[in-house]
Length: 232
Image 1 (cartoon, rainbow, N blue to C red):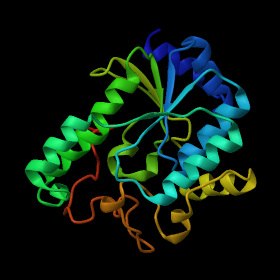
Image 2 (image 1 turned 30 degrees about the vertical axis):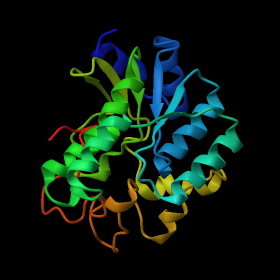
Image 3 (image 1 turned 90 degrees about the vertical axis):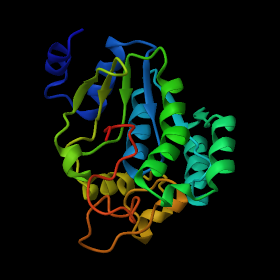
């Protein structure tokens, strides 16, 4: 199916109905990647409610917060899910850390992107193999670069459709949905963390700061991305 036709089929549909429609077009070939942030928790809840056949996966970089593992555990229990975990290749991690130490990502953008590539992008590539559509929790107001994306896209490099059910939602709407539906969420969100990644690379943000300011905060200017959704 062409991108234009698929977008037309999703027009006017609620998030849940859009997810069901996506699954009907790509049976057994839809994957959802979760990092257990509030957006992903909402989508997990919606997938559970619809009963759609979606493979739910997460990337364990080896550097996550304990709070992230806690919400992972609570989510799997609540929804009775098997969330498939992808780890980075141990040889790649061993080589990088042996040559550059455990905090090479602080040295330069190139070193940080190398770490992101090893710990996230390469495992993701394995997770997407054989899939036709990738569901993600991206929202337009997360960054300027993300606001230029669309609710449904086609990733030409990976040859896969990408669908963002909550693309037009605000942070406040997302958190409100979480609370109204009793969905487990990362307690770091209550401590000023709006975007949560690896522990050494994430900090809380102050009121009025940019949404992505807490990610790779030592880097000056530019979009804060790891290369999974937007390639630098």
